[in-house]
Amino acid sequence: AQKITQTQPGMFVQEKEAVTLDCTYDTSDPSYGLFWYKQPSSGEMIFLIYQGSYDQQNATEGRYSLNFQKARKSANLVISASQLGDSAMYFCAMREAYYSGGSNYKLTFGKGTLLTVNP
Amino acid sequence: NAGVTQTPKFQVLKTGQSMTLQCAQDMNHNSMYWYRQDPGMGLRLIYYSASEGTTDKGEVPNGYNVSRLNKREFSLRLESAAPSQTSVYFCASSEAASRVTEAFFGQGTRLTVV
Image: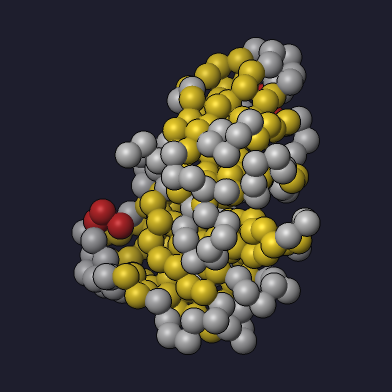
């Protein structure tokens, strides 16, 4: 079963509008972390925002916010006031613990959503 | 301020050849990861290492081996390359002791197996 599911292969948004990118996850670890990364066409991975499973408030970083609904196991990324430079692939990722002689973590990614911002 | 450095950036191999992708980080991170990225598949975890001396298989380990040489370096080896291993490979590192810190990525290696 997929740990991270991004159901939108592609999304379009008009410049200056807001857009929501969906992410659902599955884990039995009570202490997990959720991340969003942006990958522009140049290929580098850019960290955007983080949400911890115990964080009471939704994370925000500038124009990015994370709509965290723990009971529904969803962690959607909201980009406000879209800009042309936001056109990129967006990945949701989850860090969860595993036990191998101690507590360690692994990081799993979804398949990504390709966002296109239209002028 | 290098972060995560991968070498090479590009490589073309013939089927059956072997090669090692190198990765080094200078952030004193415990955890290191190797991913492959294919169109429509996202980033899939090949192997990861929680600390020096330990490695674990990820989703797609077949055809690969890894070595965590020391805390800084984590290499990925293809013993006998196959066309199915044509992909973009990313190395990443993170501070395992803190769940809140993000992973830092290298620039990627674009590998083509012909």
